[in-house]
Image (cartoon, rainbow over all chains, first blue to last red; front, side, top):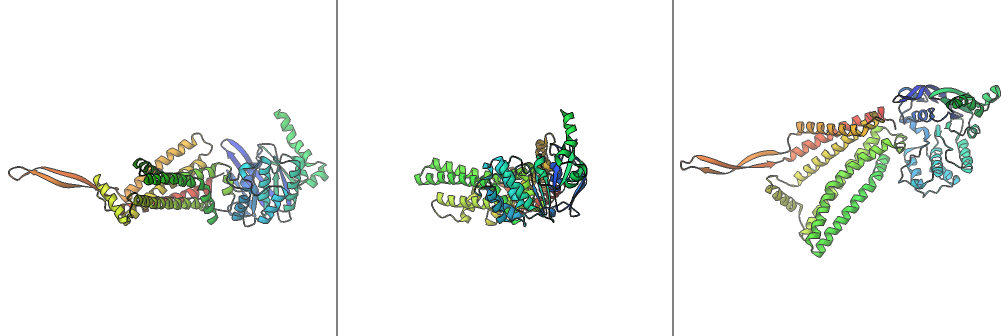
Length: 235
Length: 275
């Protein structure tokens, strides 16, 4: 459904993503894992069509990501990106105006579940409330691909439970979900596959059930195996 | 496109409301001056209104360049570039909104000016009379221009199109800066220098096609002769005039150049811009 073919992205002399070949299929929830600066966000932005790769390409259903793929790919950035003059209600209207798959009724339902008031101005939102709003506008779309960058950042435990339930509700056989997070244990309860990335390179795209049954490892164990040594060295 | 246009208008609305607010204050000063028959207050009101009318349109243009810059260089860019709209549509909405805002602004200030002059003379002033008065004033400075409604329409078209081409040139320079020079040292300075060079070139192309704005002619106003009847001294004055066709031509050239800049800018955004 979403395929990265030898994708490289360089910012000047720094290579953020280095020849990444990755195939993501529908019907799965992928956890995109890696330490800070490993290239997760850059890769997601390229898949969302916001950043142009230096070389290689990302394809959605066999075609390079472009304007048309944005109709089917819902991307949630880790940074707040809303217009400061907008209210929570305006955000829903904005998404309704631009995305045919956006359901305002579902948006209201998501806002209620996360106790966000429609009248609030986005500039007045705390970081936690902002994170909830990002989740609400993204999951109110009936997209084929959801890419959520750090969806649990700055969110309290109870709201996190709510968001986790909403993410699981959005998943189905014909959809693909890709979530990045530092909260590895949190992701273990949601994802069925994990993509490990380090220093811009793909390390492994693994089925978590297989990982557990064949290698006796949890996602967190594998994470420690891959990155633990490097982190010790860095210290 | 309709939705893009709607949100572009909404983004620039605060600036327009500020211009409108300052205009309202200046108009109030003018009206209070008239009511109190205070020449000084009237003069302050008129001066403020002339200033706002002149700079208001410029500010609307500059605001649109700043909005484009913000839409490419802050995280707010996702709001635009995440939507399934091509860069041609995104930029087209911005340019259309700007052109319409400047045109409506120009018409608004022209209407307000006519109304205020009518109030100032305490009688109904026909547009023809107003233009005739303007023509007399210009003649004092050596400009022999036959100003009528047609001339004014051509002049307004030429001026607005000219300013619009400046704005589209700035759009292009800003996109070059954001798409090709992003993260480079002296990025903003380089793009400003690039804008100045482009503006100069646009001016040169405009002059080459539309010709000079002023036509200068020498008019003999008197001669001095000697006793034999030979002319020993001729006094003449230089008269300057501008044809309405000049404004039509230069306006058309500006619009064509703006169209070319639109295509070049949108294509560059489509191919190279990362937000």
